[in-house]
Length: 294
Image (cartoon, rainbow, N blue to C red):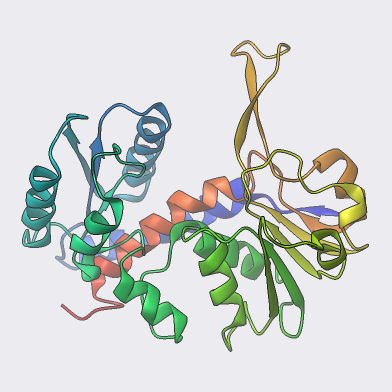
């Protein structure tokens, strides 16, 4: 069994991004600029934005944060998005989810210029991804592909089972892995809450991707011997032995499952570090016109 270390891979990719940006600046170009929009005071969103800001600094990307009150109207938020869409100094921006209930998240996503949509959620990017065209890909699924590639894990002809059908992870990673590419060329099965025979299907998986948000859902008897297991789950569970009173738990029962795997991602330290790196990679692509020509 080999642990897939997302921290090491993320650090390597950050160095590569930083080197590329240094070349751009040395040649007289400007630094990429990423803007984050946060509405309200959600603790998880605040933590993510802080990590994003630190990662930007490490790579030489300019970064700023637009804070809006939790009672901001949808019209005001859409006006700010329109302003960022037309700001030539902004290469990419994200609107941190979740948003307050009075705001239509899908309307916000669709208001973002798809050429600056470094989260990869706009329908244009989703559609282009579905048919294999260049696009900004969602950060977490993109990070998973980077891990498979960096660890030289064979995917061609493999049966991949995805647990979860969210628009953020489950659907896009399934779509990416059926593409005629590497990593990809998989036969993909997507399981969800209405799938009656999940255990039977997971035991067929050469590659199992768990993205349910259900702590320790994947147990020892659900995994085929020698499978590659990618754990996307990050749920806070009570832990009286920790000073903060909780710990992060994945969707996989790591202690029981890991002895049966060829590769497995830990939680934390597996997929998590790759999400922000993927966002930075998208920002660099937006700045250089690698996806959509400027």
